[in-house]
Image (tube, rainbow, N blue to C red):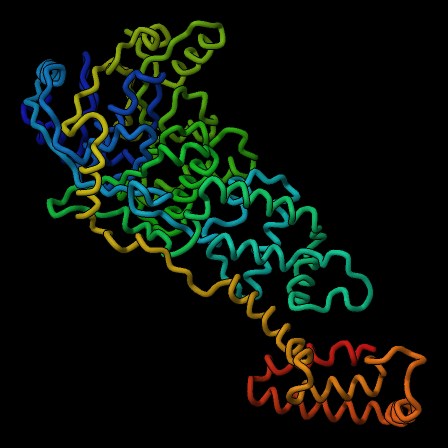
Length: 539
């Protein structure tokens, strides 16, 4: 029985979603069994999403939802008692009471919400390959890069870290002979090649795809401070769940980045949260709008990962609700995990459309009183076919209902209202300023600088011990004068000194190693010795 007060229409155990011949309730204890909201554009999916988000928030369940069009932002502002809202509420026995909900806005680009960042390491090679649209060979090389970074203690935080690492493992172009691998990145390059052929062409392709991602704003996503997912799982001072809204209108201009980002969030939740078992209500509910983008052209490895995450994350207390146009947008293995269904109208103007309607109808538990396929095409705006889990987790028979009106504002908020909300945000200042910590890029740059330093000293006109060594080397081997143009004295000096080369050079190397190694540290000292005398000792 629906009660007359808006706040008590939902119970401690259920959320009131809509009413037809029967009342449609979403059981909180079964809400982590996931769900699906489908329907053609303009049929009311966003309103249904808002009604569900409001119900969860009232029950103290934090919510995360992607907002493609900006319409969901109205949940942060007090609702308006408009005539059509009052009429619908009255038909359902509701005494409409306007309401609003604590909201935090997030934005990958940091323009209309707090920045959302992840490190390259957190994203991982599988999801990054998906984001970059890499083939199997390129994904393999990216896996090699991540492995080399791990083994050499090179943190991959942002895009420049990954770029510099790819440069380091790329084969040295054009070099031949014994000097080919002797540079500042020789060890890293050899480590990469030990896992298989890493070609310069493949590295170049990955670098170009990184450039495409950077041009689409991907640079802003990778870095620190990285998002702590516990900041999504908060309640306000009244014990209500905070509604986290990802501003995704600009992000949707790159659908692959959008889909991969949300999948990364799901994966992080799966990895970080402890097992929770069966809870009286979820820890978090996650709404994935435009869900078909996640599955379009996804390789089998990625689909397997999605299925695994959806199947197992419910035991962590997280409910995932996919929002898309048609159930056939979702692979069967994933669709089978979605027990709570809301189906808005679909239109069938072609045989292909009719096939899609029939497929949607077959995803429901039949109701003898309804021709489900026919009703899907007859539904008006705000109407839906619903089936929620009950009892032991079995779905109810499909019912035709009118979705209850939201209590918060329907539609977008103004920029001024958004600014005021962000000014009072519980995470204000925590993510707003990027931090560029020392990571792979800086570490690899230091290797280059360390190797280049001796050469600069040698070219400096003979100053210091390195200059003296250069002078000795020039005298011994005649590197400063072409063969055939030595003076008699130089020829005699050359012949005499060649007989004691090993002892002289050996003594210099030993003394230099001790002197430099003692003052600058053993590893740096050895690097300087290799830079100054590496070529000499090889010859």
